[in-house]
Structure formats: structure tokens, C-alpha cells
Image (tube, helix red, strand yellow):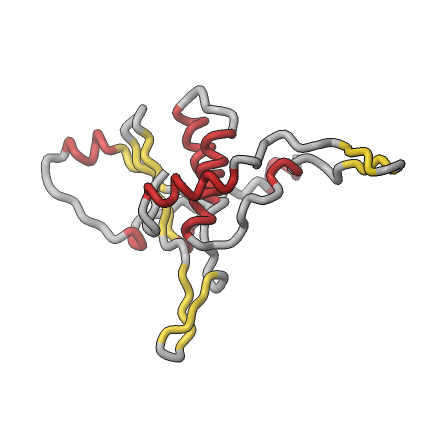
Length: 168
């Protein structure tokens, strides 16, 4: 886990507020003569904060990282990381504040996942959030010269059109 604010040690102390949260919810409870049943899975997560402040995003990502089924392969790790990051991604217009009488919006501008097994970097910007661009760092660094490209200028893949599979 990383954090931009508050400091990491503060974030870890804050996790103490969520010791009661669990991946296993209570399926039913006898209240007097009435048996009250859960509405569905996920009830053990009641109490996880859903706002977009850094502490709430840290709690969600720490919980997901700790309790999610751990990946067996690099590809599974990338997939899990993407799911965790989707839970703390800030859509434009959701996290706003007033600065000098003007409303400004925070947003997740870009996301990077580092595949340490295959030495790849997966990058996406706000406009291509569901399409990661993969960079083979072995090849990038083998060229023995500095390279610099704006994230917004990278050649992001287009979404896959599955229409033909449905028309067979």
C-alpha cells in the first residue's frame, strides 16, 4: 500500500478502526421471535468507508489486498491489482472542493501496475482507464538511450469488439 496523505504510519494506525470488518457476514440473527436474514453476501464489510478521502481509499485497498484470494501467477496478480485499484479510482466530478470561489475536481489521472515477474509496466490514463498499455522494460532499457513520452501520447489499445462472436 502507498499513500499520499496522511502519512503511512497514520494510515496503519487508522486501520485499527476497522478490526470488526470481516469477509464473512452474519447470515441470520434471531431478534425476539423474528429471524432476520441477510440480504446477500458482503454484510461483513458494513463499515468499510466508501468516500474518496485518502484515509478511506487506503482502508478499502488495504482490506481488499489482505483478504482477496491471493494470485498464483503474475497475470492473476495484475488482474487482482486492477480490481483493487478500481475500488479507489476517482472519477472526474466526484471529489470536488472550492478553491478561491472556484470548484476544482480531483481525479485519478493515471494508473501504473508493475509486473515484477515479467519486468513489464502496465499504464493507463483517465481516457483509457479500462485499456492498459503494456511496456516490456527489458526491451525499453536494452536500447541504451533515454526515452521519454507523455502518458497521454502513448498508443493505447482499442477495446475488443466481440460482435462477430455473437453473430455466428
